[in-house]
Length: 135
Image (cartoon, rainbow, N blue to C red):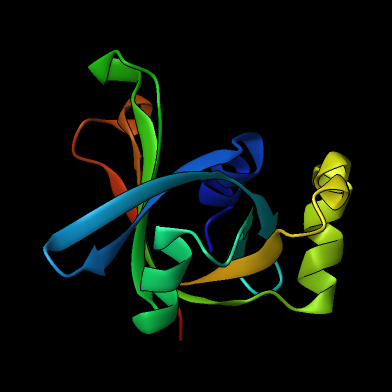
């Protein structure tokens, strides 16, 4: 993955993600840590929430991270990923970034493993997009 994409991801911490429900698309937001080795966003949530139930039923999800409201400086990521339970190593990554999350014993840790990503950075030029495909 291009270093400019990784730098953007590592400097942010909030994503919005979407899954499918019986009437269409459903969205949620989550704070994340990033697993660079496995190219996965790591999030925490409760298994009884609608977004976790939906992602468990259909593991193909989409996500978005956006920064800046002025179009000339817009930076952001659009991505597709697979929802899964986080590994022990990913749990360590998450808790090292958000140690207070250990206090919520009922929350579970999940991974959104990337398979496609598009990075927009209008500072590079309005039509310049960087794409990543997992092999």
